[in-house]
Amino acid sequence: TDRVFSGIKPSGDLHLGNYLGAIRRFVPLQNDFECIYCVVDMHAITVWQDPADLKRWTYEIAAAYIAAGVDPTAHIIFNQSQVAEHAELAWIFNCVARMGWMSRMTQFKDKAGKNSENVSLGLFAYPSLMAADILLYKATHVPVGDDQKQHLELSRDIAAKFNHDFAPSIAANGFEEAYFPLPEPVITGPATRVMSLRDGTKKMSKSESGSDMATIYLMDDAETIARKIKKAKSDADALPSEEKGLENRPEAANLVGIYAALSDKSVAEVLAEYGGQGFGAFKPALADLAVSVLATQADEMRRLVADPAQIETILRSGADRAREIAAKTMLEVRDIVGFIR
Ligand code: ATP
Ligand code: MG
Image (cartoon, rainbow, N blue to C red):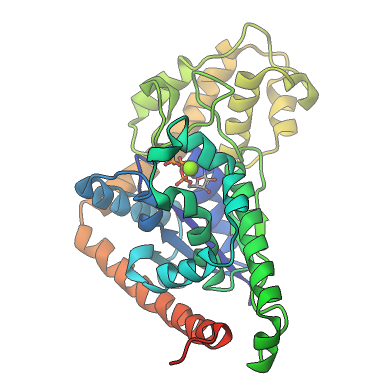
């Protein structure tokens, strides 16, 4: 069957962008795919993480997956560092990928800023590890936010180059020509790029919140969520009745997209309902909706993180099942590459 892989870094408090761009979309995929949802702790340490925070955020992400409706028995939830094969395959991919490919990654440029001499080597090689995460499981579909599109394309390039470079050995070992599938990005819905509530041109993110009012955190209480939405930057015009009226109105487009994603509607449906109304009417409706979706989930997350032993059991069981798949891939890859075992 086709397999889904996706992951989130324990690098900060989870926010609405992580939820709408990734976690919420993980849930329905369980009906059609075998799903593997990872807490990618090895990606998190590409920038400095305090060890206690890393643990806390790892529990929080596992709790968010479960609270949102991922079933850790029918599918797999685990943290990346428990399956050593991720690092092993990433090394081989470091030797397949080219420096030039990595240098073109906009996320590296953004995160390194002007100080690229002084960032970790791991931050530069990040996309190799991401390709390993996905291809270790021969995953075919990868649900992510829009910001991961370029990394996904690089994963496909790595898979294709591996298949090409090792083609004779792949054949000699009796595998299909396309040993690694080219993973498909699944970037769908009205909120694939949730923007800061204070600046409609800046992505909402864990590591760069700027102002506290810019980001809705999944653990925010009802009152905080409502306050942040009511204070969100908007404009003085009424909402348009058609989607093209949102062009050049980044803040309005962002809030309408959030409403659509939280209510499982399209942007067109939301505008059919709210077109002609101003933010004085729309923001309270959005605040009520956000609270009703997020507040119960936050309660469930709080309940789950209060029992770390239970989360550890889930992660360990997930890692055991993930490792079984990963170990088989690595046996094959070692033969293909020519490593004696
Ligand atoms: P960091 O700032 O540390 O990179 P992040 O908030 O970007 O953190 P990641 O762990 O890098 O979170 O990404 C986890 C998932 O959330 C990815 O699928 C990513 O595409 C998605 N995502 C992150 N931010 C947004 C956003 N603003 N809108 C939609 N999806 C997002
Ligand atoms: Mg990110």
